[in-house]
Image (cartoon, rainbow, N blue to C red):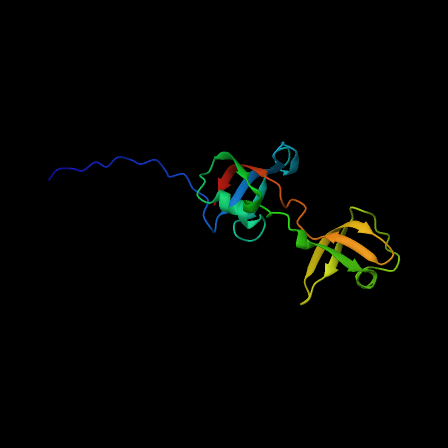
Length: 158
């Protein structure tokens, strides 16, 4: 009887799956290259995929990448934080503003103000203008309407 000799296959390189535990460096930046967040000059991040530690649109870029991959993605607004929406720029009455802040709160244009949402949630808006009757808030995500760069280097996958 002939002896079969099988070739030794090299161990397969792990890839990012929907339940992976990852160690990685990542960078989210403007199209011009200005960092929004980056771990490349710090310790790498370790996270459980699918647990909300990265935005879902960022996680979708990682699916299927092999350990050791170093890749940059360009994300159009629709793939990232969405387009800016004029309907999300709203006037808030002075009474509503006072209900949602302490009496000694001093707001300045550009402040991010947190509001109670129906059902117990929270949402935030950036103060754009203020007068005696109320204020104008922009409830768009601060990065809405921007094309972003997402750079990632997968260090390890469990």
